[in-house]
Length: 345
Ligand code: A3P
Image (cartoon, rainbow, N blue to C red; front, side, top):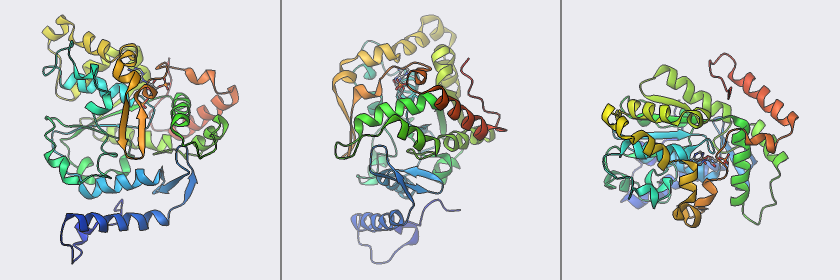
């Protein structure tokens, strides 16, 4: 099944004179698609729209359609995929530092002066407002590091069918994801909209109405794909990274084709990467305390909001015992038979 309506490029609509005509035509098709979709209450925007079982902000879905229309992966590309608030920022830093470790010294490392989202940009937010051809000439070093929050089922075939591009996926206990997300989006929610209470956010999350949600379907999509294509998708858990970051960094290096040599291990390179990317270090950097990240014209985020507590189990400080129980029950029900477990011990 085609994930999205055909773009003008694939339909070969006659009468197009140049790239901007094409972009306009694509835009019209996307707008029409958006008009007829079911809507649900938004966390940061007024509404989310549901498309093929998943929920998106209208612009988020438009970005995804652009990805289908315009993105040409390279076989060497590395994609980081995640549900929002599962540890994306941290994993971006770890992968960037691992893959580029021979390019940059630790004393003047780009992560000391740039937020991880600059070093490892979002593909979903890349295209929507730009001439897509820039991605093919962007001069980024090989391998390109690009990230997405899109569900696996809605990624373009060009990303999933190409066996050489690799994915690293991160997931996390949904109770902590919900609490982290509520804190984050509360700060980004426009003043014109009434505040979103934790109780409302909880109900929406349980019903799956959350950017790129339902959470469980997002995780299961990548989990199943990782079982089928273990050499293509590395499935990581936030809680494991917290517990054994050195093991995780070595696994990431090995999986992505940048294994650590014994000499590097002896010299403490893995430790240096873990230290550089630690919550304590990244959150205390000037760039992450005072600068703003510009995802698109409508999404500007203070870098400090990407770093809140960075711990496991903070949800118990916000959710009632009943809420925790209900989320755990949904999780066991949704994941039953999948072989995926969420135990944190
Ligand atoms: P909390 O809100 O629970 O603190 P994402 O990057 O996907 O948006 O996820 C954000 C979550 O990851 C936040 O969780 C944030 O504090 C945490 N985080 C950010 N950087 C981290 C790091 N270096 N180590 C551990 N957790 C980190």
